[in-house]
Amino acid sequence: MRSIFDGSLVKDQPTLAVTLVENHDSQPLQSLESVVEGWFKPLAYALILLRQGGYPCIFYADYYGAHYKDNKDGDEYEIFLDTHQWLIDKFLEARQTYAYGEQYDYFDHPNVIGWSRLGTDEQPGGMAVVLSNGDNGTKWMEVGQPNCTYIDITEHIAEPITTNEEGWADFRCEAGSVSVWVPQ
Image (tube, rainbow, N blue to C red; front, side):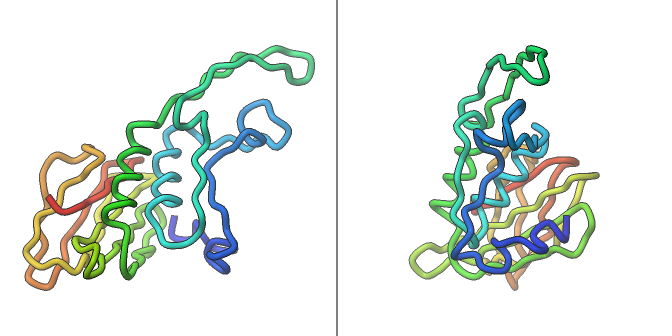
């Protein structure tokens, strides 16, 4: 995970990058098929919606779900794509309310990464995002809000976390999941 953006346009020239998880050309049975596994899509949407770089694009079928039949190599296949609307809405709410200010990356582990946004005077509060493509994970991160209680808006983790007097805390996520921590 720590190298997920290496060699990408969003890392090297973020003002020129349109970021996406999947689209009509890359979905199953299409000409540029490059399927993103359903369990990873929430992580991928967190990566494009809650970070500074790029201009994110949400795929209709990821938001509303899809069911279709199509042919490939003479065989007919039936495709079901699950909706991720509930989590995408949570990410959009966090983006609109908390994804402001400096961004600090914590990309120092092969399977667990995180970043924080410190907020601004106009948009205070900060936000911490932790995701894992392996086991449960934690990241010691700064959010710039001392002695502040944070909750996971994805509802994957029920217990709140309180920052220390310098605005740092050990934020966590479940295995193969993402947690987005915002002020309570």
